[in-house]
Length: 409
Image: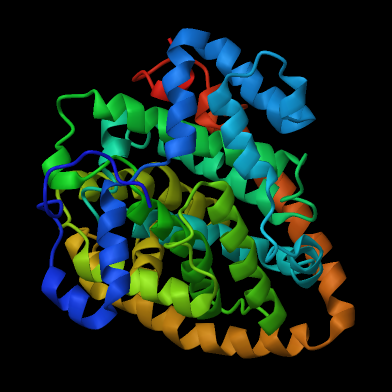
């Protein structure tokens, strides 16, 4: 793992280092080294963007995604090197099996949307160093709904049948996410407000690796908690899908989790050593709750009687406490919601048994998947209309608000 020039030792905000070495042995050293490592291939291409011009560089990138690198006749060496890695599919990748074993996961579309907002995204905010790039680029306080829709667009694209194929939309979006990370990393490295000795490299390998936990291990666990269990083959396919996505995102093989056990190990060392929550972490959670999650839960509740809408905040808070645990929820300032939490804890296992019984009847899977897909399409249209979002990722978003490195000048 190639580390950038950095101060000696570890970022000063990292905690419980000795305990991590005792518990995780050599993996602890790998994880801590990753705090000084970026993504050399994507970073090299972004270094060439200034000379190419932002618009021209991004057109090259999209052409290489859609038509292959040979279609970019004047591609710089950095782009060719990036696509040499992207086009070299590891021998452990089995896209046919991943698609086959996850063909019906869309039956739980409603539950996956709840878990995305209240678990996957919020879990990443309990780390002041990892969430700092969002603060410095304004990507959540500016518009929590927009960024949630952007993330959702990417997840839908990579999770569908064929979503990881070489010339798929999911492949292109994943490569663009990787380059967006590199653009943010480059911008923050030049920003005097970025405290390298305290936080390590912006969007470092260690915290980038944890995003796989956010979008795989945590959703699998969270959906089971609210009554939407994966079948064993679906769970295995989820870990295989995110292993390959991690490869496409530029996560070093030494850190890339191969299965559930390795994702759990990565989660444990991350939670043990993460920098403490600060005021901005709490502001991020408050923003996504007030601007997105609470309004969305209100939409799911009956309009009459009106007092039912007042249940939305405790529902959100109760779900977050179930997904994150009380310790992290307390740090993030998420209010207590004991009644909602107890209700979900009681109802979740009942729903898990009921849905599990349905899942064991194969003839129910496809009709339920179709219902979930129709619901997803309606929800996407409603959310995009409500929040005025027509683009897919931030690099294609309209100008306005705080400038973002991926938007160009």
